[in-house]
Image (tube, rainbow, N blue to C red; front, top):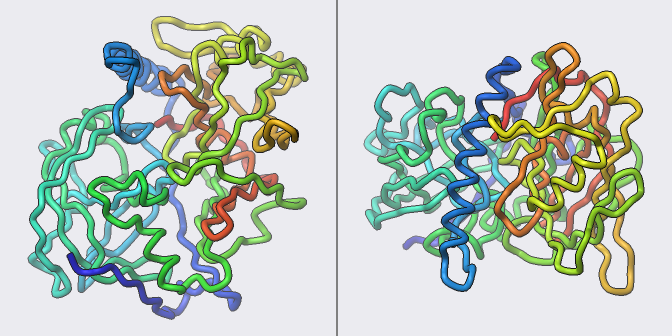
Length: 405
């Protein structure tokens, strides 16, 4: 396989600022209605229950070697160009996985941008079979190499997957704006040992002294200029200072979960609680172990809706509800840093006095801090120093409802 290389192209407006920030505009899809959000929760709850059953049936409790989440619902997406000349593709820039894949065949009943290697002068055949298992099921295809560009950055001769079977992602995939996935996690979890896109960018040196990227996620239907920045941060997207939290693994963007509390009272009930949390741009919710989620919801006096697999809350009581605090970093002899969310921060949809909270039980033995967390906090993913920088995101329009993944 040809070694991946990266070059940078100084393309007009793609170079957003003189300090070499490479900016990708992120697109947030149209808001879902209250009933659509409930339907998505119900579908997701069924998938998670099935996954929990599969995990429980594994010998010695061993899990599956697969990414944490699935991609069968909507999420923030950005545009990349594939091949030469460039073919427009809409991808999820995902910190919870490490492969780049694009559809090479129009899925039945869908309307996606399709990568056609026959139209690219920089395509190189590989042909090795590629399969990856997500939470909702598998996708399959074969490996190829080509050039990709976004925000003035270009990957040349980069190994990726052409996907010919996306049926495992479920029917909801047809209604999303995403065509494929561009993983931003570490090469250690990449399928088939393919270098992760960010790994190739960093090793090329094109990001200079700032081998980082940072997400600013917008809220309501008008958006707040949602943006992904490579090579630094945009000071207009956050207030105050960054708090830095060291990674405890180079797999997902994983840190130590030192504590979890509601209104200052810990909800960790046993010494066997999870000590892991990941910040994941490809997951819209907060998702955690059942005992933790139940303990939080009891403290908030939220109501579980078993038919839909979601928690609801009396909207009128949001302003007086206690805050939920994730304490990240730290260790046996040092305390971590507190990052709090109000009930208002966690509301996905409203109908009258009923609010749906963006928190759900997951069979995974860790906490997933998805877009609910990342809308409150501007997060810099620092590849060079193996840490997360977290600051309060600049205020903007509050979403009335947001989609879930």
